[in-house]
Image (cartoon, rainbow, N blue to C red; front, top):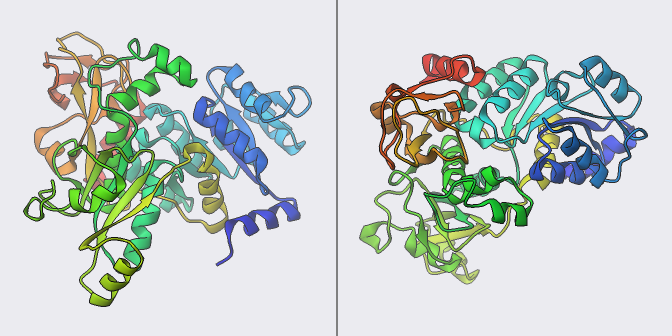
Length: 431
């Protein structure tokens, strides 16, 4: 197999690099643009953000100059003209990322479910590959987007570098070798704070150069729940308990910790997804085997005494690795991670505060709700509301106490949104 670096070098020599359109020029998007500018065989051709200065900063920080290397484009026609002339384009119009003729692959890096739905559908309808650095959209409507992309002959994929993409590489590696994969998981960077909101993390967000909503989504556990949901839908593994156990430990503790209760561990079942406080920013899989010679060799290789062993990757480079998913989609026509197992799990909405009839909600990383990781079977039985369907126009029809899950019957959804309509179609066709 030829390494991706050689494939990209070949494209550079031919003068036919991959053109990517990037939607979202926050911390993740800017890093991605900078990384692509260092790579052979790839160009961050269009950068989109609702704040045009963010898009410009992405290019400025990567060494490009406004008016010389990149220009503002308002329409697809203006974008096409710039790309044809070898220039780069910045815009507030996200359609340029997926509708300009020269674009090979669109990337959504917004983390906003509705925006992700729009970018993905535009890309698929226009014959472009789509990389989702937007797990929030994927866990809600990823199954139908995956099906639509397959039907259109394009690649729909999650991103390398995000925890689900990083862990699936180890999962596939272990499965290909014939190991019994028992647990899939990730580390968590900070202790869960269910009560945090954008106001309580303002100083921390400013220090890290990130948005307060993003930091809040990490601290209240929602991002971890979303990432585990994506892992479940890619592997078929389930939460052992709603929200997962979230135990603490180091890498060496994982084989024993993540074993069955009858074996001295914390689990009721194998074939589950977990998060662990103490191994961030890494991802891991727990494997096992009963073959005596393999057990002997694993012991010889200092992997432990068994019967459980941990494969651990101590890093994930988030958006800096996303260009590799772009390259894999365009060159090899293969995804990094997809919800190939269907809707196995959900990220359901949980009330952060006491909610009453007439209140409006605010979505991920906000003041009113957080996410929890549950099996799709349980979510359907209890009519739990997927968190990705909530926006600022979602209205409470009746009261829900803090800590309780929201159901479809509790809210009036914004029916005008694409993600709500796609979710209805997904439920009708596939669930």
